[in-house]
Each structure stands twice: as C-alpha cells, then as structure tokens.
Image (cartoon, rainbow, N blue to C red; front, side, top):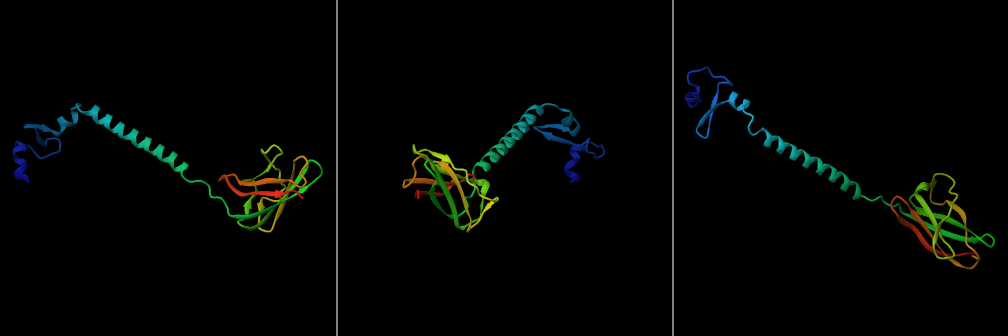
Length: 171
C-alpha cells in the first residue's frame, strides 16, 4: 500500500492533512477539500428536502393510521317492550338477554315520534354497566300511542352500530 501512496507523498510524512488524492487529473489535499465551500449549498438543500419529505410522510402516516380503525361494536341480544303511560307517554323497557356487558355511556336509545322522526329516549340505566339479565326503562312523549307500532333503536355511539332496530306494539 505504501508503494501506491508514494507518488502522492512527495517525501513528506504520512498524515491525514498532507494526504493528497487525485480528482480529474489534479491533486488535492484533504485540507483544500475541507476548506473549499463549493458544493455545500446543494448538499444542504438535498438534506433539507429529504428531511421535509420524511416529516411529511410521518404526518400523513399518522393521519391515515387514525382513520383506518373503527371502534368495534359489542355483541348483545336486546329486547324491548313499550307500555302506554296515559295519553301522551310511552314507557320503553330495554331488556339485555345475552352477549357482552354494555357500557351505559356508550349507548343511545332513540324512539320514533308521531311524525316519523326519531328522538332520544332518556333511559334510567341504574349503574354504569348494562349486563345480561338486566332491564332499564325510560319514558318519552308519543301522542295517542296505545295499539300503535313504534320503532326503537339502540345505538352504540363509538362505533355508530345499531345494537337494536325493531318495531314494537305499544301495550
């Protein structure tokens, strides 16, 4: 290896600063190359472009990662009864017949109104969980309801899935 370096050493001691290399037929020392500022701007520009691209890819990956996974709806077998409570009120009873225990804060009960639209039905769930074998009830206004068939929906709000979508006759 010393034989290969001899033409570049010119009788000086071998050191990093004195080492010379050829580029396009011209000899350059390492010190000359380090002190040469030509070409720095394109290198910095390339590094910045790569950094911006990586940052943008990370932001896009984060956004897409959040969109892709919907909340999983629980599995539950629910039943419902409807009873007339005078001329204007209907008592809705939700019965949990089996499946997963439900978190009450994640449930919304909607009842059909006289005009066919739906409205929220306030349900007295008791505690924070609705387990198999439990019942919960609430009332809402529905004019002249006895004998009519009304629609009731129970919605799992995090997933947007219907746990119950049924029609029931008001007794």
